[in-house]
Length: 207
Image 1 (cartoon, rainbow, N blue to C red):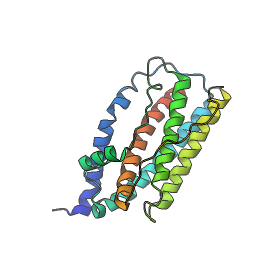
Image 2: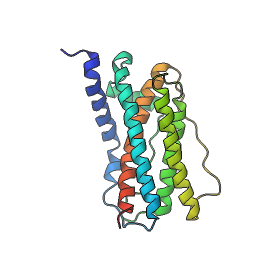
Image 3: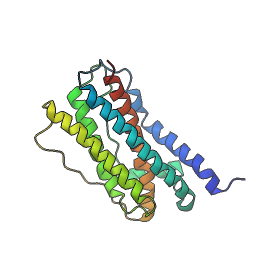
């Protein structure tokens, strides 16, 4: 019989499937998409590149968390979902993006707000562990760069609000266990957000 370490990748896969299922409303709303916009092609291609980079960073973080699953017993899906609720780890909506009549201003605003939210969540995970610190720092930097790209485009289109949003209250991770469990949840939430973002941006980039 396989030990906990051997089972941990399968457990994390089960966790990801459960979390992605809980975000199914987001994916379902991604069909159908409205007509493509007239956003600059250079902006859209840059966004797609940045999404792929962040997805790679997130996958690297998840891969490293797999090795800690057995040690810290982080991979039980039901417990993690309950912990996510108790810690108040939020989801970022994209309801203005995938719809019959895509709301460009609202979509860009939600993309930026979602990225801004994940900046805060990733910052709250600082100190997760010496091994994960560099990967977390890279992920946080790339999310920040993507948010900046979206904001600059909003400014060019005259869609940006007068003031940039301020970060709301973030979950308080009071132990190493909560930080690691929070890392699993935040990485999974972020990947779900990026999947929908990528699909929307790729549609908008179509000629």
